[in-house]
Length: 105
Image 1 (cartoon, rainbow, N blue to C red):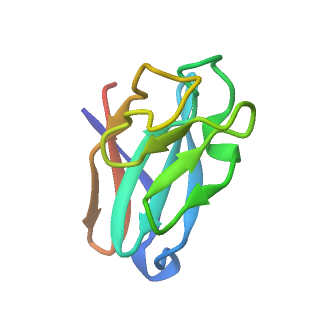
Image 2: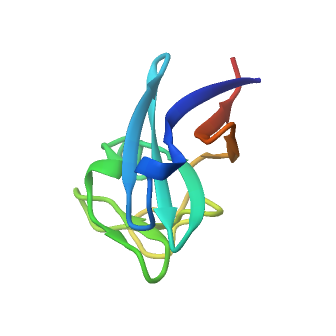
């Protein structure tokens, strides 16, 4: 497992998002109400760029900009159609003041 630096925690307050590129894919990292989540930037419905859409900070869900499927940031499970397959999520940690995402290398 590799850990990818996202941002200093001091620069990543609640409501913040970042997209980081990891090899062939991108991962959206979210600070939702002080909880950190990372989800693959790919809608399971049509492989579109999931994390370029809006997100619901109250429910901690990202909404696909193409067809409106909402995905739970913690589990990757879709909460609305047309998507019905989950999206991969990744562990997030803070080490030495830096937000990091753990990915398989």
